[in-house]
Length: 282
Image 1 (cartoon, rainbow, N blue to C red):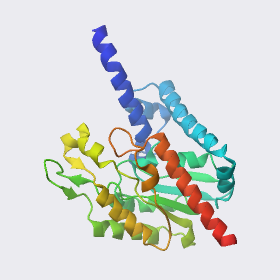
Image 2 (tube, helix red, strand yellow):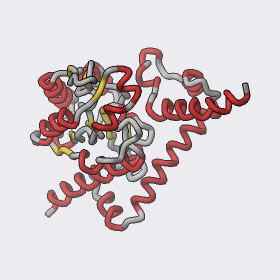
Image 3 (cartoon, rainbow, N blue to C red):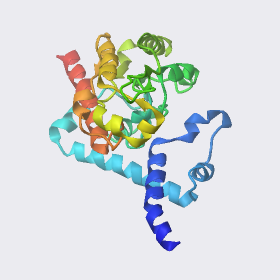
């Protein structure tokens, strides 16, 4: 019995750590009202102290990532040119790449001055259709800026495998309609304060080989991700292309990003916003 416990405990701990990193029940269960840490910890099978320790550890990793970036004077100068000002509220819309507690948005939080409020509305697994259905909640934060990184789950293919390409979860036309509806209905007074981020790169070979995806008969293709990115890059709003900078920076599923991958997205966002700010003042 002790041998079995020793063999399984690391796997169970690793799974729990991953669930805490990517899953935030308080977002998916908003109808229950505000959930205290005691209840959230129970949902993960943890005591409150352990749960809070895990959260602190994840936040420390993003804080350290930001501090490391700011050691580069050139990057720090670009970060100083970010357009977010104290008193403003910056809202993120997205799926697991943004809901990740080690996300680019969490790193961004530690690059900004005090007084800039960041609100992360991203939900792991969300499609553009689901994000659009949740649009009414966007009115409550009254955002000054919206950073939107959606589309990766839309291009999930069902029934993929054994030579079958599978069927897209959300059609290309519906994805494009939803993205534009999100932008149009968000209520931003200044369209320049809406920023798109393309879905990050997919390691298609690793994703196709991942046991969970194979058992579920689901998958992703780089071609589908490129289609969403091309649509966004054709929009007049600022679009940050995250594909090149995230290539090869994946967890074992070939889809979710490592901390290095998330840091690369944060850098790409800062560079794009700083470049636009510089062009506006030149």
